Image (cartoon, rainbow, N blue to C red; front, side, top):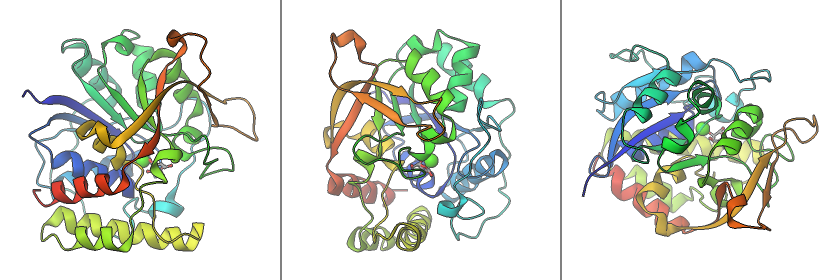
Length: 313
Ligand code: BDR
Ligand code: CA
């Protein structure tokens, strides 16, 4: 079977880091043609550096990292360092990576990498604010129809929000970019909080990862321990949700996820509900759908997949 060309657009980020490890650990499935980074959980300089650190830990310096947009399209930057630590990688020991970022801007890379390959062939996982993708769509509108499967972590319906009462962080951090993406693209698989809050790093799941004697698994376990501490201290829960790795898990094992076609729109005007995702299932015709909303996840299946893959990395 031929491998899927994949780009991961991310803002590492503790859970982005685990998503990257999961993708690094599936070279038989993915031809990981690039990682693009964006300002989000921490500033753009740190997210690009963190992606380079993570690929070095995983021994995947063959994967180019392209630094991307330094601020959202319209709104002021809002970071989530309370959830990810000042470095973006929890309390992991960070270092200056050996290999530099690739030459060129992430947005140019996205356009060039997708448009130079056959239509529908390149998959894109988006695990941060959608600034890079929105900018790429402005640069090359045909990108929307040329992209293959797009899987994004963002939004919430039943779960309210995690950065405000009504908004999820990735959409809140750049709501205008998200609205550009959902207006342009069709069939975006959307893993909002309704899905990712089902996938929790319980003690036994974390112990299974920590027991793997490999550098990336050790780093993943360390990051999840940090995330669980934040979950206890800031949210009052016990096991943190595994948001971003669900995008890669979906691409590896879509049978673990239940989806429902919807029309997704983003609130960009109201200060009170900025970044809220309105998810409408009552469609007058199938053409109205722009997204597939993930409503249910086999959480143990996702953790089994993650554990099994990390053991190979
Ligand atoms: C999303 O927000 C970020 O803080 C995480 O990395 C994840 O992408 C969850 O709402
Ligand atoms: Ca993220």
